[in-house]
Length: 300
Image 1 (spheres, helix red, strand yellow):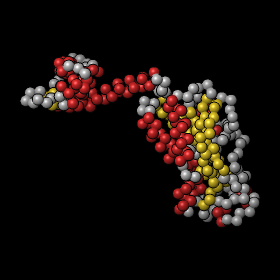
Image 2: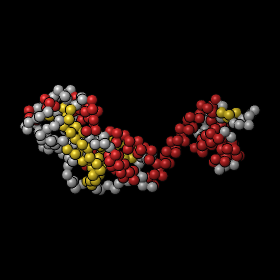
Image 3: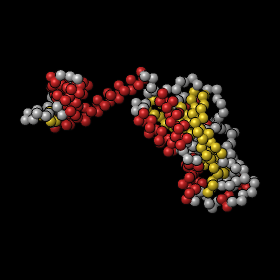
Image 4: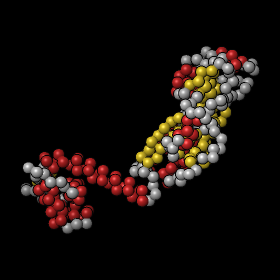
């Protein structure tokens, strides 16, 4: 038996009858005559060679076994069609079809989670590509056209190809494990030079020859902030960390905030960055505002 191919309209009629529980209810919902609904179901049944509803012995159409078996597939097809139409309407309205966003590794994770959760509800048709990078690699993603929007730190000054807007800051503090010599207190000037400092590095060339709060000639350069965090907790060296990332460690005593005479801690500014030759769409602009607002709500 050669099967026909039901139209999208017939699938919608099928779903409307099942959801409304009657041909009349489906007709009212779709703004059609009852006869048009009945015809659509009959045509779909003829094309598929199955009965979709039991009509005899009941005033209410009841799904047959075949009808129940096809219900999920019919709904999946119509859902995909609805998504396609919604995205097309968004494109006509100027909404981006997708956004590539690169975040500085210093960004608080709870801010990222909250903003992107709201983003998904606000812009369900916009696909998101998310990257997390450190230092100069954030800027490199923009300049290499791998992202449309970046939230980055003070790695690079004003760049002729980029626009910049400050949207918040992160508190960096020097920390070490309680058994580390610098954690004992009363640290004399120059003592930090005698101890291994863990320093964040990145894969880009923007930070070549640039050092950020590096006080010791003894350094390990790490490309992963999580690895740095783990080594610090093991007592391997000392280093600066974002306060939000070590807050629980400070409360539990796993790490100690160091009181150093050089005061290497600092406010790490976070900036929204984008290329000057690219106009920001509504979803991208929303991300900038949402991240700025959430950062303002974060505790120090």
